[in-house]
Image (cartoon, helix red, strand yellow):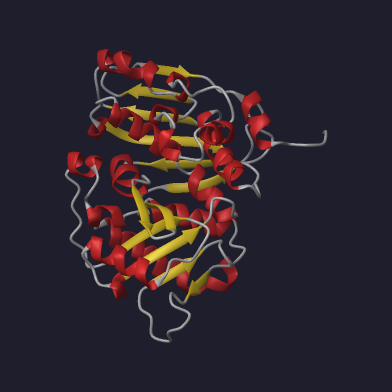
Length: 324
């Protein structure tokens, strides 16, 4: 089944019948028109959204190829709950769907675009490298932004995906919303997979994956919101990858995978973000990786662990007050 059809079926089956309960809203794209086409679902811009909405948003972003759960706290890292992601198809779920590789921009509108719609557009190096194909008639995407996109934006996205506007679904949530926080923190495996791709590792050798990261408190400030969700992975994310590779390849790249291998590592992301004048793309790409990565080599039976957790940086970033 295609990635977009899988995501579209998840929306039709679990989101649309439960909009009110999930606190999600189907938005009219053009308020001046009664007949605007396309489907935009607001998970947190003008509605509360929530935890369940966030879990569904993350599943949509991964084309429903992963199990995503809220699990109890790991008290060695953070006192709050954690977000756990497991998948037996990490390359498709993370790189062909979830990776935020589309800068959706037109005029004053800007959003980080992710989800299976990217496999329809096919204009990213990683998609070309993996030979991703999706000939389905629909496109489903996730936009990380603070505003509902206009008719012009959805028409642009539909055109670039090669589908009709009426076959296009966009799910929208800002990073500062509860659903948006869940959607971003669900990227622990994705960051490891992208880092491996950049290091030249054959992603097809990654057979299964598990990731876990703390769910940070939402922030009112834009930079703090982006900072906390990134820090959850950079300083508190733990990923285990089951791979069919050689020990020599793992040993050659393993230490380069965790976030601590980056020159920008060591302080809350919001501080780094401000230092780069709020330009996300000036930050060292190598920073976007889990704090700790474990490789379980199915070929040799050996395991390798790289990186470490940094709860003190999380505490600084998350700004927890009070005492037990």
